[in-house]
Amino acid sequence: MLNPQLITFSCVADCGSFKKAAEKMFISSTAVMNQINALESRLNLKLIKRTSHGVDLTAAGEEIYKDTKFLVEYTRRSVENARKAMESAERTF
Image 1 (tube, rainbow, N blue to C red):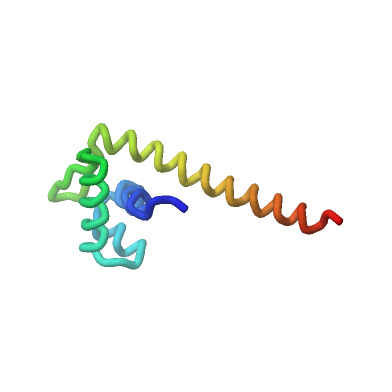
Image 2 (image 1 turned 120 degrees about the vertical axis):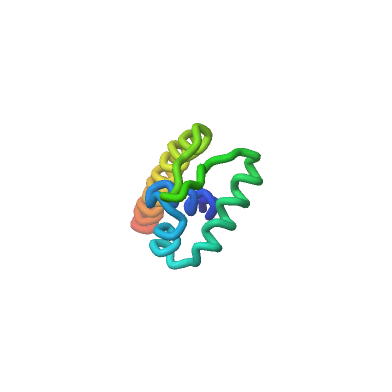
């Protein structure tokens, strides 16, 4: 339901590096970098500072990260509520 680039961005922020995020997501580091580059390009924002010790979020990245975490949780609750509604509707005669 969510943009896969936002999920990748969130994972990179949580892991602190492209390599660790790639390992966690079972994709290549190149795929992770490509997704982050595409997201930054699409938003026209620099979200991540690349360093020799991993990555840090820019001020814009911090804002997007907070909102992404909110969206992930909101989506999870929405799907959970939809499943409950479906179960309830199936029991109604």
